[in-house]
Image (cartoon, rainbow, N blue to C red; front, side, top):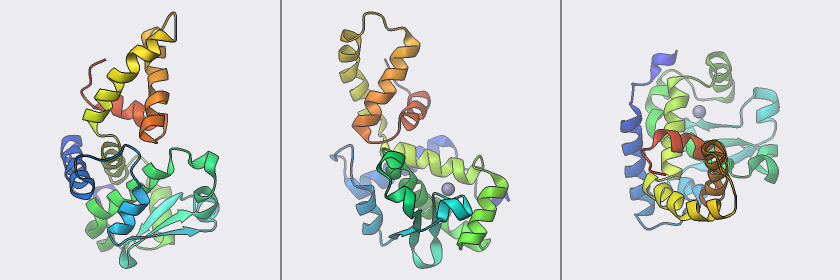
Length: 199
Ligand SMILES: [Zn+2]
C-alpha cells in the first residue's frame, strides 16, 4: 500500500513547493500568509467536521471527489491546540491534492472510512505522508527567508543570554522562528535540519 505514489526526492518536493508558492503568492509575500485563503482560491472547500479526530483518529483529510478538505471541528476551534499547527495541517492536505490526487483516487481513497483505515493501518511514516510533510514544510518556510531571520535573531538571542551552548541556541531559535513563520517549533526544527543554512 505504501507504493501507491511515485517516489519523489526531497529536492524534487522542495522545488515543486517553491514553484507552487511562487505561482500562488509571488516572491514578495508576508511570512504568515493566509493558507486557508490560498486553499479556497484553488477551489477547495475547508469543512470542519465533528468527531473526525475522536471517531476516526484524523485531524484532517482530503475528499478528492468533491474538492473538500475536512478538519476536525473541535481542533479547528481550539486556539491552544492549533496555535501554529493549523496552517501546516491544511498545507499538508493541500499537498495531497497537488502531489497525490490522481494516485489516491485510483485506489479508492476518497472517503472518511477508507482514509482512516489507510492512515491507521500504515501509520504516519509512509512515503505519502512524508512527501506531503516535506512539501508543506518547504512551502510554509522558504529557506532564504529562514536564513535571513536566523541572522536577524542571532544577535538578539545572544544578547539576552550570558551563556548559550549550541544545543540551547538551536532550541530557543526554533521557538523564535516559529513565531515569525506562524508554524510550530517542530516544523522549524525540521527545516533547520533539512535546509543548507549558516548560523
Ligand atoms: Zn496526510
